[in-house]
Amino acid sequence: MKDSSDPSSRKLTKVFIYSVIIVALLVVIGAFNPNQFGAVSGSIADWVSKYFGWYYMIVTSAMLFFCVFLIFSPIGKLKLGKPHHEPEFSTRSWLTMLFSAGMGIGVVFYSTSEPISHFVTPATAEPETEEAVLEAIRATIFHWGAHAWGMFGAVALSLAYFQFRKGETGLLSKTLRPILGNKVDGPIGIVIDVLTVFATVIGVAVSLGVGTTQINGGLNYLFGMPINLTMQGLIIAAVTFLFLASAWSGLTKGIKYLSNTNMIVASILLLTVLVLGPTLLTLNMLPTATGEYINTFVARTLDAAPLNPQKNEWLQSWTIYYWAWWLSWSPFVGIFIARVSRGRTVREFVLALLSVPTTIGIIWFTVFGVTGIEVADRVPEIVNLGPETQLFAIFDQMPLSVPMSILAIILVSSFFITSADSATFVLGMLTSDGSLRPSVKIKVVWGISLSSIAYVLLLSGGETGLEALQSAAIIAALPFSVVLLMMMFSFYKDANKERKYLGLTITPNKHRMKEYLNKEEEKYQEQKNSGVDERDL
Image (cartoon, rainbow, N blue to C red):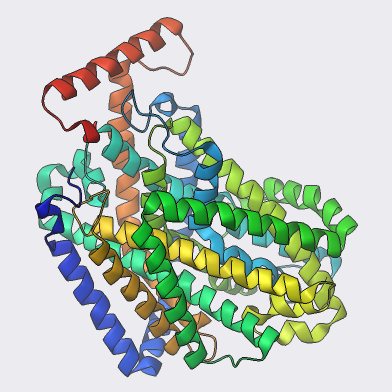
Protein backbone atom coordinates (compact mmCIF):
# COMPACT_ATOMS: atom_id res chain seq x y z
CA MET A 1 0.00 0.00 0.00
CA LYS A 2 1.04 3.57 -0.56
CA ASP A 3 1.60 5.98 2.25
CA SER A 4 1.71 9.71 2.27
CA SER A 5 5.48 9.73 1.94
CA ASP A 6 5.19 8.20 -1.51
CA PRO A 7 4.93 10.92 -4.16
CA SER A 8 2.35 8.93 -6.10
CA SER A 9 0.02 8.92 -3.09
CA ARG A 10 -0.01 12.72 -3.14
CA LYS A 11 -1.40 12.93 -6.67
CA LEU A 12 -5.01 14.00 -6.91
CA THR A 13 -6.95 10.89 -7.88
CA LYS A 14 -9.96 10.86 -10.18
CA VAL A 15 -12.14 9.90 -7.23
CA PHE A 16 -10.96 12.99 -5.34
CA ILE A 17 -11.47 15.33 -8.31
CA TYR A 18 -14.95 14.05 -9.23
CA SER A 19 -16.09 13.95 -5.61
CA VAL A 20 -14.91 17.49 -4.86
CA ILE A 21 -16.69 18.77 -7.98
CA ILE A 22 -19.98 17.14 -6.95
CA VAL A 23 -19.75 18.41 -3.37
CA ALA A 24 -18.78 21.90 -4.56
CA LEU A 25 -21.81 22.00 -6.89
CA LEU A 26 -24.12 21.02 -4.04
CA VAL A 27 -22.63 23.72 -1.82
CA VAL A 28 -23.00 26.41 -4.48
CA ILE A 29 -26.57 25.44 -5.44
CA GLY A 30 -27.63 25.14 -1.81
CA ALA A 31 -26.00 28.42 -0.81
CA PHE A 32 -27.49 30.51 -3.65
CA ASN A 33 -30.98 29.01 -3.60
CA PRO A 34 -31.48 27.31 -0.23
CA ASN A 35 -35.29 27.39 -0.24
CA GLN A 36 -35.57 25.68 -3.62
CA PHE A 37 -32.81 23.26 -2.65
CA GLY A 38 -34.71 22.32 0.50
CA ALA A 39 -38.04 21.99 -1.30
CA VAL A 40 -36.67 19.73 -4.05
CA SER A 41 -34.71 17.53 -1.66
CA GLY A 42 -37.77 17.26 0.59
CA SER A 43 -39.98 16.16 -2.31
CA ILE A 44 -37.46 13.54 -3.43
CA ALA A 45 -37.09 12.23 0.13
CA ASP A 46 -40.86 11.95 0.54
CA TRP A 47 -41.09 9.96 -2.68
CA VAL A 48 -38.25 7.65 -1.64
CA SER A 49 -39.78 7.05 1.81
CA LYS A 50 -43.19 6.29 0.33
CA TYR A 51 -42.10 3.90 -2.40
CA PHE A 52 -38.88 2.43 -0.98
CA GLY A 53 -39.55 2.31 2.74
CA TRP A 54 -40.13 -1.46 2.51
CA TYR A 55 -36.82 -1.80 0.66
CA TYR A 56 -34.89 0.03 3.39
CA MET A 57 -36.39 -2.31 5.97
CA ILE A 58 -35.36 -5.42 4.01
CA VAL A 59 -31.81 -4.15 3.41
CA THR A 60 -31.39 -3.23 7.07
CA SER A 61 -32.69 -6.60 8.24
CA ALA A 62 -30.50 -8.49 5.76
CA MET A 63 -27.32 -6.75 6.95
CA LEU A 64 -28.11 -7.39 10.61
CA PHE A 65 -29.03 -11.05 10.18
CA PHE A 66 -25.94 -11.57 8.02
CA CYS A 67 -23.77 -10.39 10.91
CA VAL A 68 -25.61 -12.68 13.34
CA PHE A 69 -25.13 -15.60 10.94
CA LEU A 70 -21.36 -15.00 10.90
CA ILE A 71 -21.18 -15.44 14.68
CA PHE A 72 -22.24 -19.08 14.31
CA SER A 73 -20.48 -19.70 11.00
CA PRO A 74 -16.94 -21.16 10.64
CA ILE A 75 -16.15 -17.87 8.89
CA GLY A 76 -16.21 -16.34 12.38
CA LYS A 77 -12.84 -17.97 13.08
CA LEU A 78 -11.09 -15.99 10.35
CA LYS A 79 -8.87 -13.14 11.47
CA LEU A 80 -9.24 -9.67 10.02
CA GLY A 81 -5.59 -9.58 9.08
CA LYS A 82 -2.54 -11.80 8.76
CA PRO A 83 -1.65 -14.47 11.36
CA HIS A 84 0.92 -12.21 13.04
CA HIS A 85 -1.40 -9.21 13.30
CA GLU A 86 -2.34 -8.21 16.82
CA PRO A 87 -4.98 -5.57 17.73
CA GLU A 88 -3.54 -2.07 17.46
CA PHE A 89 -5.72 -0.63 20.23
CA SER A 90 -6.67 -1.94 23.66
CA THR A 91 -10.18 -3.40 23.91
CA ARG A 92 -11.40 -0.43 25.97
CA SER A 93 -10.05 2.17 23.54
CA TRP A 94 -11.33 0.11 20.60
CA LEU A 95 -14.87 -0.01 21.97
CA THR A 96 -14.95 3.68 22.87
CA MET A 97 -13.70 4.61 19.41
CA LEU A 98 -16.43 2.47 17.82
CA PHE A 99 -19.17 4.12 19.83
CA SER A 100 -17.87 7.71 19.66
CA ALA A 101 -17.35 7.66 15.91
CA GLY A 102 -20.45 5.55 15.31
CA MET A 103 -23.23 7.70 16.71
CA GLY A 104 -21.94 10.05 19.37
CA ILE A 105 -23.70 13.31 18.51
CA GLY A 106 -27.07 11.71 17.90
CA VAL A 107 -27.31 9.97 21.28
CA VAL A 108 -27.18 13.38 22.98
CA PHE A 109 -29.44 15.21 20.52
CA TYR A 110 -32.17 12.54 20.54
CA SER A 111 -31.64 11.38 24.15
CA THR A 112 -34.77 13.10 25.43
CA SER A 113 -36.39 14.61 22.34
CA GLU A 114 -37.17 11.30 20.63
CA PRO A 115 -38.74 9.56 23.66
CA ILE A 116 -40.80 12.68 24.37
CA SER A 117 -42.00 12.79 20.76
CA HIS A 118 -43.00 9.10 20.87
CA PHE A 119 -44.75 9.69 24.22
CA VAL A 120 -46.84 12.52 22.78
CA THR A 121 -47.44 10.95 19.33
CA PRO A 122 -46.81 7.19 19.62
CA ALA A 123 -47.16 4.80 16.71
CA THR A 124 -50.00 2.75 18.19
CA ALA A 125 -50.52 3.49 21.91
CA GLU A 126 -52.83 6.09 23.41
CA PRO A 127 -50.82 9.35 23.70
CA GLU A 128 -49.41 10.38 27.08
CA THR A 129 -50.33 7.15 28.86
CA GLU A 130 -48.28 4.53 30.72
CA GLU A 131 -48.43 2.38 27.61
CA ALA A 132 -47.07 5.31 25.60
CA VAL A 133 -44.12 5.63 27.99
CA LEU A 134 -43.14 2.02 27.41
CA GLU A 135 -43.62 2.29 23.67
CA ALA A 136 -41.57 5.50 23.55
CA ILE A 137 -38.56 3.92 25.28
CA ARG A 138 -38.87 0.72 23.26
CA ALA A 139 -39.08 2.54 19.92
CA THR A 140 -36.08 4.75 20.71
CA ILE A 141 -33.94 1.78 21.73
CA PHE A 142 -35.03 -0.04 18.56
CA HIS A 143 -33.84 2.81 16.35
CA TRP A 144 -30.47 3.09 18.10
CA GLY A 145 -29.86 -0.59 18.75
CA ALA A 146 -28.52 -3.60 16.91
CA HIS A 147 -29.86 -2.67 13.46
CA ALA A 148 -27.56 0.33 13.15
CA TRP A 149 -24.54 -1.68 14.28
CA GLY A 150 -25.45 -4.52 11.96
CA MET A 151 -25.21 -2.13 9.02
CA PHE A 152 -21.92 -0.70 10.24
CA GLY A 153 -20.56 -4.17 10.92
CA ALA A 154 -21.40 -5.62 7.51
CA VAL A 155 -19.50 -2.80 5.80
CA ALA A 156 -16.56 -2.89 8.22
CA LEU A 157 -16.14 -6.66 7.98
CA SER A 158 -15.89 -6.62 4.22
CA LEU A 159 -13.43 -3.72 4.23
CA ALA A 160 -11.20 -5.13 6.98
CA TYR A 161 -11.19 -8.59 5.42
CA PHE A 162 -10.17 -7.48 1.94
CA GLN A 163 -7.77 -4.80 3.11
CA PHE A 164 -5.90 -6.57 5.89
CA ARG A 165 -6.27 -10.20 4.85
CA LYS A 166 -6.30 -9.97 1.05
CA GLY A 167 -4.00 -6.99 0.64
CA GLU A 168 -6.46 -4.76 -1.19
CA THR A 169 -6.48 -1.01 -0.73
CA GLY A 170 -9.08 0.40 1.66
CA LEU A 171 -11.65 1.26 -1.03
CA LEU A 172 -15.17 -0.11 -1.13
CA SER A 173 -14.82 -0.83 -4.84
CA LYS A 174 -12.00 -3.30 -4.15
CA THR A 175 -14.23 -5.40 -1.90
CA LEU A 176 -16.27 -6.28 -5.00
CA ARG A 177 -13.38 -7.95 -6.85
CA PRO A 178 -14.73 -11.49 -6.25
CA ILE A 179 -17.88 -10.64 -8.25
CA LEU A 180 -16.72 -7.86 -10.62
CA GLY A 181 -13.13 -8.97 -11.21
CA ASN A 182 -10.68 -6.38 -12.55
CA LYS A 183 -13.55 -4.05 -13.48
CA VAL A 184 -13.15 -2.59 -9.99
CA ASP A 185 -9.86 -1.07 -11.19
CA GLY A 186 -11.56 0.86 -13.98
CA PRO A 187 -14.48 3.27 -14.45
CA ILE A 188 -16.92 1.04 -12.54
CA GLY A 189 -14.64 1.17 -9.51
CA ILE A 190 -14.40 4.96 -9.77
CA VAL A 191 -18.20 5.29 -9.86
CA ILE A 192 -18.55 3.08 -6.78
CA ASP A 193 -15.93 5.04 -4.86
CA VAL A 194 -17.40 8.42 -5.82
CA LEU A 195 -20.81 7.17 -4.70
CA THR A 196 -19.20 6.06 -1.43
CA VAL A 197 -17.68 9.50 -0.92
CA PHE A 198 -21.01 11.19 -1.63
CA ALA A 199 -22.90 8.96 0.83
CA THR A 200 -20.20 9.53 3.45
CA VAL A 201 -20.26 13.31 3.05
CA ILE A 202 -24.05 13.44 3.37
CA GLY A 203 -24.20 11.00 6.28
CA VAL A 204 -21.56 12.84 8.28
CA ALA A 205 -22.94 16.27 7.35
CA VAL A 206 -26.32 15.25 8.76
CA SER A 207 -24.68 14.38 12.07
CA LEU A 208 -22.66 17.59 12.13
CA GLY A 209 -25.77 19.63 11.38
CA VAL A 210 -27.61 17.94 14.24
CA GLY A 211 -24.68 18.64 16.56
CA THR A 212 -24.55 22.28 15.53
CA THR A 213 -28.22 22.88 16.29
CA GLN A 214 -27.86 21.30 19.74
CA ILE A 215 -24.79 23.36 20.63
CA ASN A 216 -26.75 26.43 19.51
CA GLY A 217 -29.71 25.35 21.64
CA GLY A 218 -27.50 24.90 24.69
CA LEU A 219 -25.85 28.29 24.29
CA ASN A 220 -29.30 29.84 23.90
CA TYR A 221 -30.55 28.27 27.10
CA LEU A 222 -27.44 29.05 29.10
CA PHE A 223 -26.42 32.46 27.81
CA GLY A 224 -29.38 33.72 25.80
CA MET A 225 -27.54 33.55 22.49
CA PRO A 226 -29.92 33.55 19.50
CA ILE A 227 -30.85 30.40 17.62
CA ASN A 228 -30.25 31.38 14.00
CA LEU A 229 -28.15 30.54 10.97
CA THR A 230 -25.52 33.18 11.77
CA MET A 231 -24.84 31.67 15.18
CA GLN A 232 -24.84 28.17 13.72
CA GLY A 233 -22.34 29.27 11.09
CA LEU A 234 -20.03 30.62 13.80
CA ILE A 235 -20.36 27.36 15.75
CA ILE A 236 -19.49 25.30 12.67
CA ALA A 237 -16.48 27.53 11.96
CA ALA A 238 -15.18 27.21 15.53
CA VAL A 239 -15.61 23.46 15.73
CA THR A 240 -14.14 23.02 12.24
CA PHE A 241 -10.95 24.67 13.44
CA LEU A 242 -10.82 22.30 16.42
CA PHE A 243 -11.41 19.08 14.51
CA LEU A 244 -8.91 20.04 11.81
CA ALA A 245 -6.35 20.56 14.57
CA SER A 246 -7.21 17.09 15.87
CA ALA A 247 -6.95 15.62 12.36
CA TRP A 248 -3.51 17.20 12.03
CA SER A 249 -2.28 15.22 15.06
CA GLY A 250 -3.11 11.87 13.43
CA LEU A 251 -5.59 9.04 13.98
CA THR A 252 -3.93 7.27 16.87
CA LYS A 253 -3.44 10.36 19.02
CA GLY A 254 -6.38 12.60 18.20
CA ILE A 255 -9.31 10.22 17.91
CA LYS A 256 -8.12 7.77 20.56
CA TYR A 257 -7.82 10.47 23.24
CA LEU A 258 -11.04 12.19 22.19
CA SER A 259 -12.99 8.91 22.23
CA ASN A 260 -11.79 8.01 25.72
CA THR A 261 -12.62 11.53 26.91
CA ASN A 262 -16.09 11.31 25.36
CA MET A 263 -16.93 8.14 27.27
CA ILE A 264 -15.74 9.63 30.57
CA VAL A 265 -17.83 12.81 30.10
CA ALA A 266 -20.84 10.77 28.88
CA SER A 267 -20.60 8.45 31.89
CA ILE A 268 -20.52 11.40 34.32
CA LEU A 269 -23.56 12.99 32.65
CA LEU A 270 -25.43 9.66 32.57
CA LEU A 271 -24.84 8.94 36.26
CA THR A 272 -25.80 12.50 37.22
CA VAL A 273 -29.12 12.27 35.36
CA LEU A 274 -29.78 8.82 36.84
CA VAL A 275 -29.19 10.04 40.42
CA LEU A 276 -31.01 13.37 40.11
CA GLY A 277 -33.88 12.07 37.99
CA PRO A 278 -36.60 9.51 38.82
CA THR A 279 -34.02 6.90 39.85
CA LEU A 280 -36.31 4.10 41.01
CA LEU A 281 -38.62 4.38 38.01
CA THR A 282 -35.61 4.38 35.67
CA LEU A 283 -34.03 1.32 37.30
CA ASN A 284 -37.32 -0.56 37.08
CA MET A 285 -37.72 0.48 33.46
CA LEU A 286 -34.30 -0.86 32.42
CA PRO A 287 -35.11 -4.60 32.52
CA THR A 288 -38.66 -3.94 31.30
CA ALA A 289 -37.51 -1.93 28.27
CA THR A 290 -34.81 -4.50 27.51
CA GLY A 291 -37.36 -7.31 27.61
CA GLU A 292 -39.76 -5.39 25.37
CA TYR A 293 -36.96 -4.69 22.91
CA ILE A 294 -36.06 -8.38 22.71
CA ASN A 295 -39.66 -9.67 22.64
CA THR A 296 -40.79 -7.39 19.80
CA PHE A 297 -37.49 -7.43 17.90
CA VAL A 298 -38.42 -9.61 14.91
CA ALA A 299 -41.94 -8.26 14.54
CA ARG A 300 -40.80 -4.63 14.54
CA THR A 301 -37.88 -5.42 12.25
CA LEU A 302 -40.19 -6.60 9.46
CA ASP A 303 -43.27 -4.45 10.13
CA ALA A 304 -43.97 -1.97 7.33
CA ALA A 305 -47.58 -1.37 8.54
CA PRO A 306 -49.19 -1.68 5.07
CA LEU A 307 -52.75 -1.69 6.50
CA ASN A 308 -52.30 1.01 9.13
CA PRO A 309 -51.89 4.47 7.50
CA GLN A 310 -51.16 6.22 10.80
CA LYS A 311 -48.41 3.80 11.79
CA ASN A 312 -47.05 3.75 8.24
CA GLU A 313 -46.68 7.54 8.33
CA TRP A 314 -44.95 7.26 11.72
CA LEU A 315 -42.55 4.65 10.32
CA GLN A 316 -41.63 6.93 7.40
CA SER A 317 -40.95 9.84 9.76
CA TRP A 318 -38.86 7.83 12.20
CA THR A 319 -37.79 4.27 11.37
CA ILE A 320 -37.22 4.76 7.63
CA TYR A 321 -35.32 7.98 8.33
CA TYR A 322 -33.06 6.18 10.80
CA TRP A 323 -32.43 3.22 8.50
CA ALA A 324 -31.55 5.63 5.69
CA TRP A 325 -29.29 7.68 7.99
CA TRP A 326 -27.45 4.56 9.15
CA LEU A 327 -27.09 3.35 5.54
CA SER A 328 -25.60 6.66 4.39
CA TRP A 329 -23.49 6.78 7.58
CA SER A 330 -22.24 3.18 7.15
CA PRO A 331 -19.36 3.77 4.71
CA PHE A 332 -17.77 6.31 7.04
CA VAL A 333 -18.29 4.26 10.21
CA GLY A 334 -17.48 1.02 8.41
CA ILE A 335 -14.18 2.27 7.04
CA PHE A 336 -13.19 3.76 10.38
CA ILE A 337 -14.17 0.64 12.34
CA ALA A 338 -12.29 -1.53 9.85
CA ARG A 339 -9.21 0.68 10.27
CA VAL A 340 -9.12 0.22 14.06
CA SER A 341 -10.12 -3.48 14.08
CA ARG A 342 -7.18 -5.16 12.38
CA GLY A 343 -6.06 -8.31 14.16
CA ARG A 344 -9.46 -9.28 15.61
CA THR A 345 -11.43 -12.32 14.50
CA VAL A 346 -14.73 -12.01 12.64
CA ARG A 347 -16.61 -13.56 15.57
CA GLU A 348 -14.94 -11.31 18.16
CA PHE A 349 -15.65 -8.28 16.00
CA VAL A 350 -19.35 -9.02 15.42
CA LEU A 351 -20.08 -10.02 19.02
CA ALA A 352 -18.50 -6.84 20.38
CA LEU A 353 -20.08 -4.57 17.79
CA LEU A 354 -23.62 -5.89 18.21
CA SER A 355 -23.63 -6.30 21.99
CA VAL A 356 -21.61 -3.50 23.61
CA PRO A 357 -22.95 -0.38 21.79
CA THR A 358 -26.50 -1.77 21.89
CA THR A 359 -26.26 -2.32 25.66
CA ILE A 360 -24.90 1.20 26.14
CA GLY A 361 -27.76 2.52 24.00
CA ILE A 362 -30.39 0.71 26.07
CA ILE A 363 -29.02 2.17 29.30
CA TRP A 364 -28.54 5.66 27.87
CA PHE A 365 -31.96 6.07 26.27
CA THR A 366 -33.78 4.51 29.20
CA VAL A 367 -32.15 6.90 31.68
CA PHE A 368 -32.59 10.03 29.57
CA GLY A 369 -35.91 8.93 28.08
CA VAL A 370 -37.63 8.20 31.37
CA THR A 371 -36.26 11.40 32.91
CA GLY A 372 -37.29 13.48 29.90
CA ILE A 373 -40.81 12.09 29.76
CA GLU A 374 -41.31 12.47 33.51
CA VAL A 375 -40.19 16.12 33.46
CA ALA A 376 -42.10 16.97 30.26
CA ASP A 377 -45.25 15.44 31.75
CA ARG A 378 -44.93 17.88 34.68
CA VAL A 379 -43.91 20.85 32.52
CA PRO A 380 -45.97 20.53 29.30
CA GLU A 381 -44.42 23.57 27.60
CA ILE A 382 -41.20 21.56 27.13
CA VAL A 383 -43.02 19.44 24.55
CA ASN A 384 -43.46 22.49 22.29
CA LEU A 385 -39.75 23.37 22.31
CA GLY A 386 -37.46 22.41 19.46
CA PRO A 387 -35.52 19.14 19.87
CA GLU A 388 -32.25 21.08 20.08
CA THR A 389 -33.33 22.83 23.30
CA GLN A 390 -35.50 20.20 25.04
CA LEU A 391 -32.58 18.54 26.81
CA PHE A 392 -31.48 21.85 28.36
CA ALA A 393 -35.05 22.71 29.33
CA ILE A 394 -35.28 19.38 31.15
CA PHE A 395 -31.98 20.03 32.94
CA ASP A 396 -33.40 23.42 33.97
CA GLN A 397 -36.04 21.59 36.02
CA MET A 398 -33.43 19.54 37.88
CA PRO A 399 -30.72 20.31 40.47
CA LEU A 400 -27.27 21.19 39.05
CA SER A 401 -28.92 22.36 35.84
CA VAL A 402 -26.13 24.69 34.73
CA PRO A 403 -23.26 22.21 35.28
CA MET A 404 -25.22 19.49 33.45
CA SER A 405 -25.98 21.82 30.54
CA ILE A 406 -22.32 22.83 30.26
CA LEU A 407 -21.31 19.17 30.39
CA ALA A 408 -23.82 18.36 27.62
CA ILE A 409 -22.44 21.12 25.38
CA ILE A 410 -18.88 19.90 25.98
CA LEU A 411 -19.96 16.33 25.16
CA VAL A 412 -21.74 17.30 21.93
CA SER A 413 -18.75 19.42 20.88
CA SER A 414 -16.33 16.60 21.64
CA PHE A 415 -18.48 14.08 19.74
CA PHE A 416 -18.65 16.60 16.88
CA ILE A 417 -14.87 16.85 16.75
CA THR A 418 -14.42 13.06 16.97
CA SER A 419 -16.89 12.31 14.17
CA ALA A 420 -15.54 15.03 11.90
CA ASP A 421 -11.94 14.04 12.64
CA SER A 422 -12.74 10.41 11.78
CA ALA A 423 -14.59 11.48 8.65
CA THR A 424 -11.71 13.57 7.31
CA PHE A 425 -9.45 10.52 7.66
CA VAL A 426 -11.98 8.26 5.93
CA LEU A 427 -12.63 10.67 3.06
CA GLY A 428 -8.90 11.29 2.69
CA MET A 429 -8.35 7.54 2.52
CA LEU A 430 -11.16 7.04 -0.03
CA THR A 431 -9.75 9.73 -2.31
CA SER A 432 -6.08 8.72 -1.96
CA ASP A 433 -6.27 5.22 -3.45
CA GLY A 434 -7.01 3.75 -0.03
CA SER A 435 -3.86 5.04 1.66
CA LEU A 436 -3.85 4.52 5.43
CA ARG A 437 -1.91 7.77 5.72
CA PRO A 438 -3.74 10.35 3.57
CA SER A 439 -2.07 13.73 3.31
CA VAL A 440 -3.07 16.48 5.72
CA LYS A 441 -3.97 18.79 2.83
CA ILE A 442 -6.57 16.35 1.50
CA LYS A 443 -8.01 15.89 4.99
CA VAL A 444 -8.29 19.68 5.36
CA VAL A 445 -10.16 19.92 2.04
CA TRP A 446 -12.67 17.34 3.21
CA GLY A 447 -12.99 18.92 6.64
CA ILE A 448 -14.00 22.22 5.08
CA SER A 449 -16.29 20.42 2.62
CA LEU A 450 -18.11 18.58 5.40
CA SER A 451 -18.71 21.78 7.33
CA SER A 452 -19.90 23.57 4.18
CA ILE A 453 -22.42 20.85 3.31
CA ALA A 454 -23.68 20.78 6.91
CA TYR A 455 -24.27 24.55 6.82
CA VAL A 456 -25.96 24.39 3.40
CA LEU A 457 -28.37 21.75 4.74
CA LEU A 458 -29.14 24.01 7.69
CA LEU A 459 -29.68 26.94 5.29
CA SER A 460 -32.17 24.97 3.24
CA GLY A 461 -34.08 23.54 6.20
CA GLY A 462 -35.81 26.57 7.69
CA GLU A 463 -35.53 27.36 11.37
CA THR A 464 -33.93 24.13 12.59
CA GLY A 465 -32.70 22.55 9.38
CA LEU A 466 -33.75 19.14 10.69
CA GLU A 467 -36.06 18.34 7.78
CA ALA A 468 -33.35 19.07 5.21
CA LEU A 469 -30.90 16.90 7.17
CA GLN A 470 -33.38 14.02 7.20
CA SER A 471 -34.09 14.42 3.48
CA ALA A 472 -30.41 14.32 2.60
CA ALA A 473 -29.90 11.06 4.52
CA ILE A 474 -32.90 9.34 2.94
CA ILE A 475 -31.87 10.31 -0.61
CA ALA A 476 -28.18 9.42 -0.29
CA ALA A 477 -28.91 5.96 1.11
CA LEU A 478 -30.94 4.68 -1.86
CA PRO A 479 -28.25 4.27 -4.56
CA PHE A 480 -25.58 3.33 -2.04
CA SER A 481 -27.63 0.48 -0.60
CA VAL A 482 -27.06 -1.50 -3.82
CA VAL A 483 -23.30 -1.31 -3.25
CA LEU A 484 -23.73 -2.51 0.34
CA LEU A 485 -25.71 -5.58 -0.75
CA MET A 486 -23.02 -6.43 -3.30
CA MET A 487 -20.36 -6.06 -0.60
CA MET A 488 -22.08 -8.60 1.63
CA PHE A 489 -22.34 -11.14 -1.17
CA SER A 490 -18.73 -10.55 -2.23
CA PHE A 491 -17.42 -10.94 1.32
CA TYR A 492 -19.32 -14.16 1.90
CA LYS A 493 -18.21 -15.62 -1.42
CA ASP A 494 -14.52 -15.03 -0.76
CA ALA A 495 -14.55 -15.69 3.00
CA ASN A 496 -16.41 -18.98 2.55
CA LYS A 497 -13.86 -20.03 -0.04
CA GLU A 498 -11.08 -19.09 2.38
CA ARG A 499 -12.53 -21.05 5.30
CA LYS A 500 -12.95 -24.13 3.06
CA TYR A 501 -9.31 -23.87 2.01
CA LEU A 502 -8.26 -23.66 5.67
CA GLY A 503 -10.55 -26.52 6.67
CA LEU A 504 -12.57 -24.54 9.19
CA THR A 505 -15.77 -26.16 10.49
CA ILE A 506 -18.40 -25.28 13.06
CA THR A 507 -17.32 -28.12 15.38
CA PRO A 508 -14.07 -27.29 17.22
CA ASN A 509 -11.24 -29.63 16.27
CA LYS A 510 -7.73 -29.24 17.68
CA HIS A 511 -6.17 -31.04 14.73
CA ARG A 512 -7.98 -28.82 12.22
CA MET A 513 -7.15 -25.67 14.19
CA LYS A 514 -3.46 -26.58 14.19
CA GLU A 515 -3.64 -27.27 10.46
CA TYR A 516 -5.42 -23.94 9.96
CA LEU A 517 -2.72 -22.00 11.82
CA ASN A 518 0.00 -23.78 9.84
CA LYS A 519 -1.70 -22.84 6.56
CA GLU A 520 -2.06 -19.24 7.72
CA GLU A 521 1.66 -19.12 8.50
CA GLU A 522 2.51 -20.67 5.11
CA LYS A 523 0.43 -18.03 3.29
CA TYR A 524 2.14 -15.29 5.25
CA GLN A 525 5.63 -16.61 4.49
CA GLU A 526 4.79 -17.02 0.79
CA GLN A 527 3.67 -13.41 0.55
CA LYS A 528 6.68 -12.22 2.53
CA ASN A 529 9.10 -14.15 0.27
CA SER A 530 7.38 -12.79 -2.83
CA GLY A 531 8.58 -9.29 -1.94
CA VAL A 532 5.39 -7.79 -0.51
CA ASP A 533 6.10 -4.74 1.67
CA GLU A 534 6.24 -5.78 5.35
CA ARG A 535 3.79 -2.97 6.24
CA ASP A 536 1.20 -4.48 3.92
CA LEU A 537 1.41 -7.99 5.38
